[in-house]
Image 1 (cartoon, helix red, strand yellow):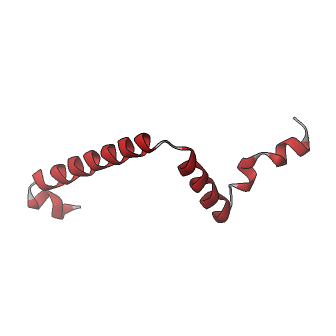
Image 2 (cartoon, helix red, strand yellow):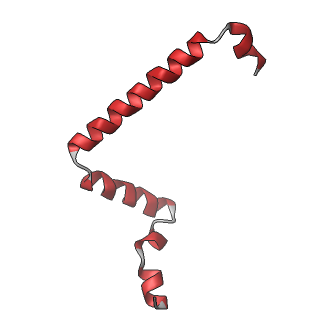
Image 3 (spheres, helix red, strand yellow):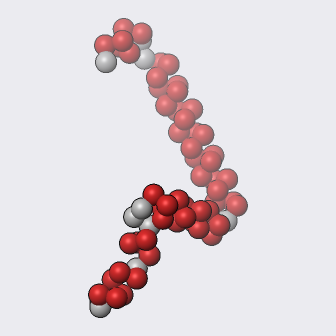
Length: 65
């Protein structure tokens, strides 16, 4: 790999906050709608599991930490 190829790699441009934002937008444009829905459903399931786990702990145990 030459030096020009190394620095032309998109990873170097995505290391800044602006580049990371652009990369995230690009990924969003390339991701199918169905995949986005599946991700949201998985995130919701995880949130509900964490909430149920937190609520099932006794109050004394939650106040210790």
